[in-house]
Image (cartoon, rainbow, N blue to C red):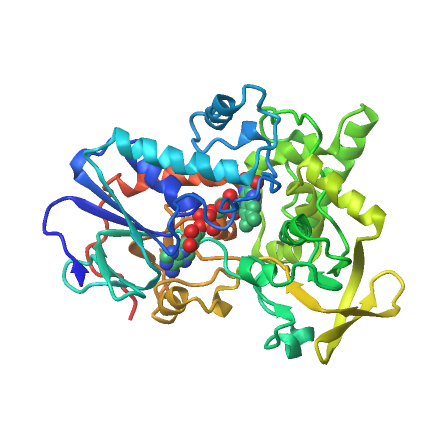
Length: 476
Ligand SMILES: Cc1cc2nc3c(=O)[nH]c(=O)nc-3n(C[C@H](O)[C@H](O)[C@H](O)COP(=O)(O)OP(=O)(O)OC[C@H]3O[C@@H](n4cnc5c(N)ncnc54)[C@H](O)[C@@H]3O)c2cc1C
């Protein structure tokens, strides 16, 4: 069945109703478009706004950004704190609220905007989009869902979130065994591991810590190894973090050659100087945040690649920090011996009946170490290499040339108007992307403080009625 509309109303379909998709809808509604606009939000799930990050029921999982910087609305920084204070007046901008509460907040924000704009139809469609194709003739798009339904829209926004990690080559033999959990966000698979004998998590970043807390919040899992090449955990936020100071472009980065080496040196030197004045390194990292897209753009391709191969592990643990209480929880697990960090390179694995062993070349000693475990969870981080994504919708769009991989292989190629760039290198007409893979263009684009700004700009772009080229840009 096709949902056709012959009215002059513009139809915008947003595929993916997690944070980015829901916030794009919120910003469209805030423009009070009346009946000139119809918004269709498509998602496999049923609770808009929650997505991967905010769908948890467990209040033990905290936001990793203080409440004062988690407003969903770019022009109203106190919006989330006020929501929290309605529940508990003790909340303040330095509180690390739970992700469950944040999901409630996003759902409510969308509902309130929809109620305020009854003239604009907001339709939530449940289902998985498996194909998006431009139609000959009027150049509108047809979105096909796995349940057989199809939707017609004048503009389509892809807000698909993260893709599961790639399977690491050294443990290729494990991929098809029940001892291997390839998707760290597969709650059902994790639940089956509760209480099991030693488990190894591949990765030590925020995804691995999420899985660690999940495995240990319900049951007493005896021992968990966290294995990564660098052996680095995310750094903690301070208790009572200061709101980021509004400052101009950091003077210590002015007039530098656009190289990773020059920027790293300048940053380290400024952190040292600041420490001699009693300052904290976090304040210096925070100064960069509004200017990271500008810096990223100045870097030639080779330097971006150098950053991704040599510096990103160090950048990530300083930039993407943990709530202080989550860090304390991790530290006490390490002290008690329940958790052990292993820095090294996986050499291979052997399956022995229901158990397995992985061999690791330790980073600092070069010794070969063998871990005997019952399960491995792949927490190496979302796959951003579009050429390797196996999700049906992305496969169709990629194979039919509607979108392409960026040259650093960390996301979709888009322009400043959020239009995806097609195989011919042209902006695809009326096909847009928003989400963490904007990092290919802006680098700093995966968390709420940036995505809320992108959602607002995208909504403005969608309704700007800028003339589009009339010839079809559907690639052939
Ligand atoms: C565990 C976790 C914790 C985080 N914590 C924080 C935090 O504390 N602070 C912060 O600032 N940032 C945090 N982030 C960063 C996070 O990336 C963003 O906050 C935001 O959630 C990204 O939103 P998104 O809409 O792009 O993806 P998601 O919110 O994951 O939404 C994607 C949606 O698309 C749907 N979808 C995908 N494909 C299809 C399809 N083909 N058809 C139909 N529906 C589809 C999915 O069902 C999902 O609902 C966290 C991220 C994760 C993963």
